Image 1 (cartoon, one colour):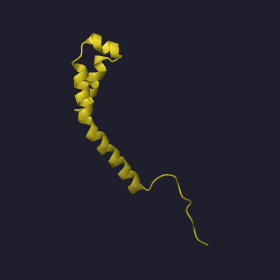
Image 2 (cartoon, rainbow, N blue to C red):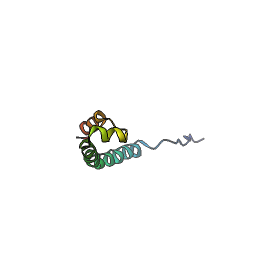
Image 3 (spheres, helix red, strand yellow):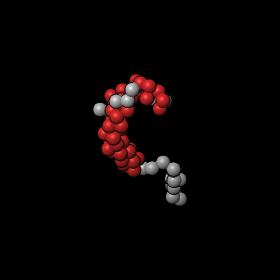
Image 4 (cartoon, one colour):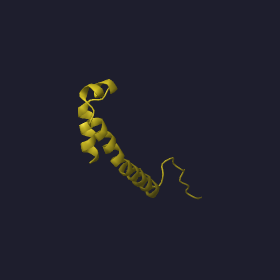
Length: 67
């Protein structure tokens, strides 16, 4: 009779593209906040960072990734 395609749990390509675009825009909108926070942490001494359990190289990597 009629060929029926069973529904899948994956969104249609247009919906999937929209979800990816939305996620990218949200990440882009928070990146300045991430950079500001990393720059603030970068101003701390090595001793203060170690008390927080943060490596300076991780902060510098984060700044470079989001600039």
